[in-house]
Image (tube, rainbow, N blue to C red; front, side, top):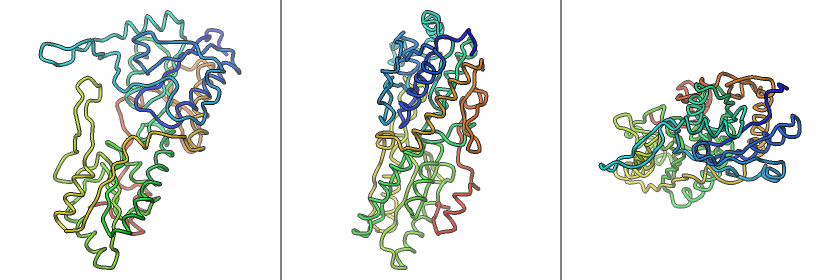
Length: 366
């Protein structure tokens, strides 16, 4: 271990996700017990750096949290220190200021030699900002959307898929009882990994993802053809970011104070209304929303999160700088942290799972 490394920080940014506490536990316990480091928790992501809400973690602080959902440190998907909201102008619009210097002062005050940043592309973009100011940041990929560039999988994804699949299975029974078409809207703004995997796992009849704009007319024809052949119900799994080929994504709201201001939602209801109007088939909608983020992480996510957390600490003690922990070809390794900044890993149109789903009769809306 480099004798220059004594104190490290850890934060969780972006949306909450099953497995975050497993990473925090792995980082703290391995750093303290194996390497004699001091570990400091930064509350609510980068907001804790801005506001100097930083305190030391002990092994007692992280005991018993492996199975817990959420994050004991809290998180924020609104704080970007390089564009921090400091007030509101006369026109009602937010006033932004770069407060990176304030964060650097707090990092220096606590003598942090490195910071482990757990998050998705937005968090890695924030980490890249600190890297450019000389801070050693080690990234750990987290997003239920599984859309982070550089890694084959992110922890939290498998739990989200399980939750969505379970919901689709339950919807299946009520759809069959009432002879309806049922639309289930799952998360996935620009990447349809959850819809694709949960749709296949549940045997959904139609899967609609952002990467493949759909043809409403063909969907209606598909559902009517199923009905004509005696299949009196249909299950449609749709990503929140899906859109018709002649239209755009459905925006639920815009938050100008957020670094990522667009909030999607409502495409499921829109599609259900369109199907009902065109076919006369009663169609209902269920929006899973944040239920996909909550609850106890699956064992697979706990294991992956533990491996990621331990590898992040190993990188620091080896003297590595500005790396992103990733899973590639079933092996935990690492890459340059900037590789994941401001990018998204989307579903390729020739993904093997799409081909497999089409082979068993699943329709993708085109």
